[in-house]
Image (cartoon, rainbow, N blue to C red; front, side):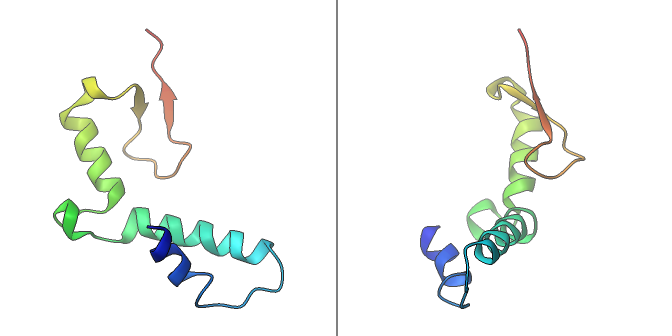
Length: 80
């Protein structure tokens, strides 16, 4: 994954400061997680795979996901 990220960002573009690559990296990670369909996941995006796994095996997860809200801040801890 590190090689994929470097090839898509650092090796492809020239950056004068550290802020543009951080923004570009964030955009790349979002696009990868929510749009890139992977053979290893049988044509699902990483996000779709997590949501599918969460719906099938809820007992394995320690957090409660909201499958209708994408992004990193879409879950809340389950208090037992």
